[in-house]
Each structure stands twice: as structure tokens, then as C-alpha cells.
Length: 102
Image (cartoon, rainbow, N blue to C red):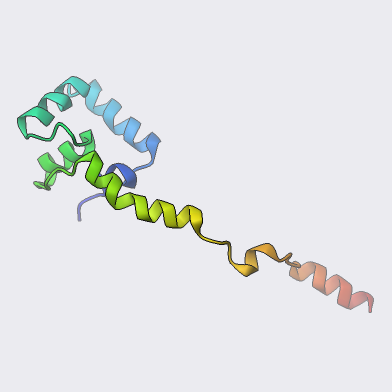
């Protein structure tokens, strides 16, 4: 099973650690940028370049990835909170206490 190497699939700290580890081993940003040129993926993220090398996945442009993500992001921020989230809740402990007093 291949890990999720899409930019949106990795937390920023994980991405930073991976790219830092690659740079320590002599495969930093310059080398990834050169590889982008070699595989004709200059409009793709460095993680797409790595996914292409590791699993022969076609590189996805940043523009295409944004087009795919835009409806999901818009839906997330435009969704109304559920009716349950706005009503106050009573903990079971509080319910027990009020029942015990009656």
C-alpha cells in the first residue's frame, strides 16, 4: 500500500520533515526542481514529483489540484453547523446530581 504523498494529504510538519530529510541526504529543493523539469512537471508540487518517481503516478498540476479541492473547501466553510452542536449538553454526572436532589 502506498502512502498518501499528495500535498493535501500530509500535515505541514510531516512534509517539512520529509523534505528536510531528503535535503540532508543531498536531495534538496534544487534537485527536486531539476527533476520537475526532467519529467515535465514544473507546474506540480515537489510531492507529485516524488510520487511520480516512487510509484509512477502522473504529476498533477497545482492548478488542477486547486480546481479539485475548491468545491470541497467551499462546501466545508459554507456548511451550516448541525442543530445538535448549538444546543447545550448536560453531562451524565450533572443529570445524576439533579435527579438525586429531587
